[in-house]
Image (cartoon, rainbow, N blue to C red; front, top):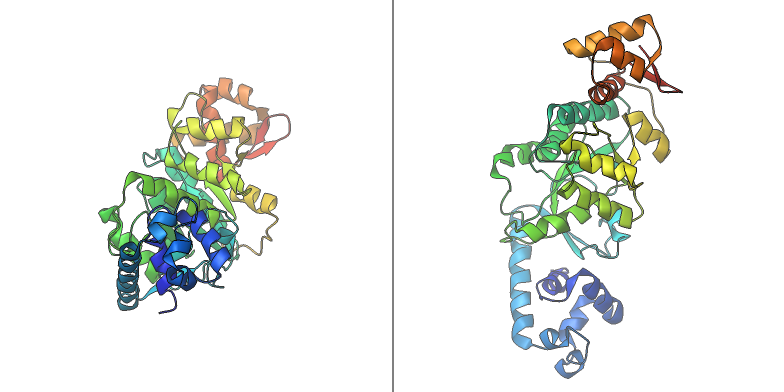
Length: 362
C-alpha cells in the first residue's frame, strides 16, 4: 500500500504533475501532505483550498485504494516517479506524471526507445515508409523498442510491424487500463503484451479517452523515447504535438519528406523546413545521428524486392546511367514531385543510392 498517498495526490484536481512534485519536494513524502494540519495547507498558493479540504482528501484516498486493488487484480504495475522502475527518460521532463500504470512486463528503462508516430489517415506512401523503417531497424541486432500511441494509421501499423519483426513495442494510451481505445485494437493490444511489450498510461481506471488526454498522452510518448520519428502528417495533427513535445525536451526529432504538393506530408515538410526535425531517408540515418552501434545484420528474409511498375522504370534507367533527379524525371516521364517520393522509397528498399550533386544510381 506504499503508493496509496502517491496515487491519492493524483486524484486531487488542480494540483497537476508539476504542482505534485513541488509538494513532494517540500514534504518529502505524499503521506506527509495528507497528514499536514489543514490551516497550514490552506496557506499554500493556488491549491491550499482543495488540499485543506478533509472531504476531498478522504475521497482521493478512497479512490487510490480502489485503484491499487484494481492494479493488483489485473497484474498492473504502478511506477512512482521517484522509483527506479519509473522511465528515467520521462523523469527528466518537468511535466512528467508522478504515477504511471503499466500492463505488460517490459522494462521501461532498457534499450533504445524510438517513438514512431504519424497521421491516422495513412497513405500508401506512409505505409511503405512505416513498414520499411521498422523492418530496417529489425535488421540490426540492437535492443530497440518501438513506442507509439495505438491509434489508427501510422501508430497501429508501427505496432503491428514491430510485432511482425519481433521488436518489442510500447503503446501509450489516453485512458485507464480498464478499457481500450480504439476498441478495434483490442486484439493488437493483447498481441503487444504477449510479444513482450506493454500498454502504458498515466490515467487511472474509469478514465475515458477525452480529447485533451491525447495531447497529454503525446508528451509521454515523446518523453519516454530517445527520439521521435514523424512518418507522415498533414499540416495539423497529433504527431506534430508529439514532435513539439520532443523538441521541448531537447530530444531528437526526425521526419520523412513528402511531395511538396502532398497535403498528407505537409506537416513533415514543415517540420524539416522550419528546422524542427531532421530529414531522414532510412533507419541508417537515425542510428548514425544517434550514435548507436549497428551490429551485424540478420539474414535478409527476401532476396528480391517487389517494385511497382514506375519503380521498375526508374531503376531500369538508373542501372544504365547515374543521372540527376531532373534528368531522370524527363527520361522517365514522371513529375519531379512524384519522382522524389519514388526515389525516397527506393532508397528505403536499398535499391537506389543518392550521390552528391542530386545524382542517383541503382
